[in-house]
Image (cartoon, rainbow, N blue to C red; front, side, top):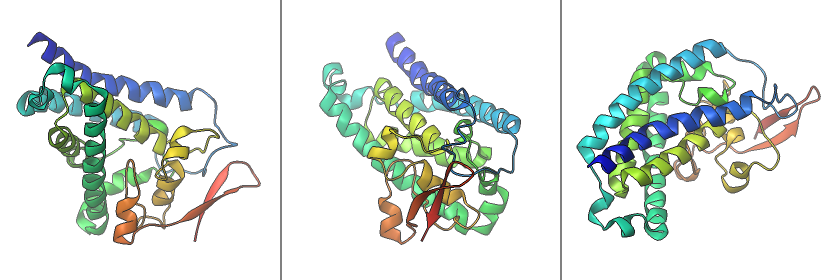
Length: 247
């Protein structure tokens, strides 16, 4: 029992630590002006940080409760089986698909429903220029629907253990931070292996892009299937940085 509690605590707090460490990477190398995708914003960095810390306090509390309620000590498999690379890889793939499906349809609904957008999701879109550390800059209700419920579904349907979920949600955290970093760095592996990346999500954050590119955080399949995919090309700006030109 002590090991299970330890795993649940690790699964709750390690992704939070990872969030700030990976965000600090983008914060510590100056302005990245030569790689920035665009250059204006509607909310201060101080307000973003306060909101994110508040969100993480709420989410960590709810996560501990949900781990105790849902369980999933390896989905009934032996410890060696539940920790095998093959089983974990399968659980990752299932959880990624579940997460993407939930995020796409909830994200799209929060845009199309005028009440939900005006009172809740518009909060996130004050970040015209996403900050890396503003990946979860959301209204608390939206954070509950998107992150807590979506995370619980990914965890329970995939059957992963708390220890495996620590790796999965840390990966999700890194991917989400990178998608909101607002820069296009050469050699970034997320840009190489995922079409859903910082430029793709920046298009969604453009003032005219709110009807497109709802998919997050991994694939673009639902945008393609549902006709909300907006293609783009990256062009260098004369004053420095890049611009995602849509067409």
